[in-house]
Image (cartoon, rainbow, N blue to C red):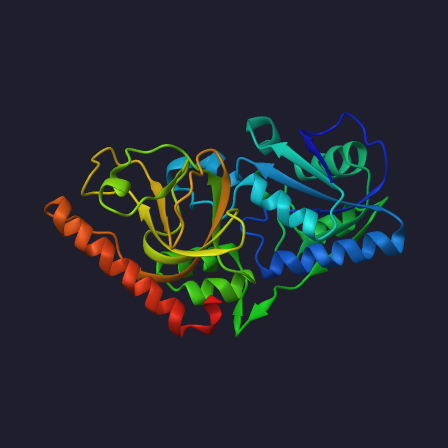
Length: 308
């Protein structure tokens, strides 16, 4: 898969294209990617995705933008899984936001990306002030065909990034898993910490978070990247008992594992929320709670078939 940052001056080949943020790559997104790959094969076109960085809502109001569900790397991994061969990552800035609907179609889709077949959601909007919609796109399409996809429903509710965030914020991880088609996960490289967990008898793998997370608390987790998948317990939050800086951190205590993993990339899947984060009066109280959390996570793994 080829990653292209920015838009080329002119397309070098024709593509079948889908456009969107694809935050979380939930089951609705997955259906679109599968349809993209199918159409590209039928039409002998290169399957391509146009996505944006930053998320448009972050550009217009960073303080009020929702937390991201996935990193760019996470999205790219998902695109690759579905057979996408090209990903164009457009910088969403003032110039891009000011493009009118006609320019977006003529200059971006046709001239720069070479779109011959375009797949969008039925509520797709584009251009300055979101003036363009599906009907306008179809009227404007002269050199490409347009296909729309209806929303995907999962257990009676629409698969959407906003509903995934809602489920994660509420600690409803089983619901989030249904909407995503997989457990919600965070990946990153393990960094050195203060070694407090090791001092307390619970050495942790620490992943600093660059952005606000859509969930927080204490969780039973599954960890990939340390050989076979491993079980553990994780804290995701700001560590109010030991740190007043307010920086979010993911700390993972991996069961029955005591190897140095600094610098290694791991992926942490969140399977079940145990409780909210809390402040404790001293380290002894915190240690007792960590031990109770580890026992609760082990009990979850012992009784939940979904945790295998």
